[in-house]
Picture 1 (cartoon, rainbow, N blue to C red):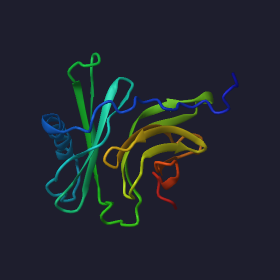
Picture 2: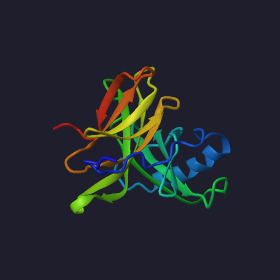
Picture 3: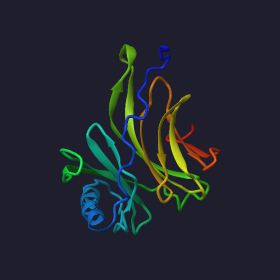
Picture 4: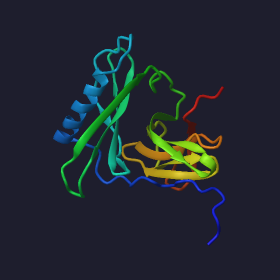
Length: 203
């Protein structure tokens, strides 16, 4: 076995296990998400939230994360997630947590976007010699048609991938490590790259 030149975590999260939430389950999750939205501290008049959009689930270190977004009446977008744990497969969800923030950078206001991305940092990861990176939860919408798979790319390394569900995807990846920053790529059914977007604005 060859020694890894770049020993970093890859594909650390479980693949999506359930359909995108709907019905009473979606309503229960939305209640928790909107409660988190109501706790956002800002001087902006965000306006009433609209319908909550859910993204594929990903499970990492025993917690399942369900990202969400919702437009507001005043042109903002609320984004965040609801997370929970289960004692075992098939058990009731418990230990819920919800986080939310807002942005005025929306896909509607930026028609040139090919991917609409949101991100939350879940924790840190330490590599050799005390080097530190962030574990990022990234979710998004493909704004170009016929996408099949989204991947997370850290420098030359693919660190996660997710099959699109209703043009939506969720990734969990190492980010901000030894000078490399996460880039999300969209791939078509035949494996052709269709779009790429950094989580960081270019200077």
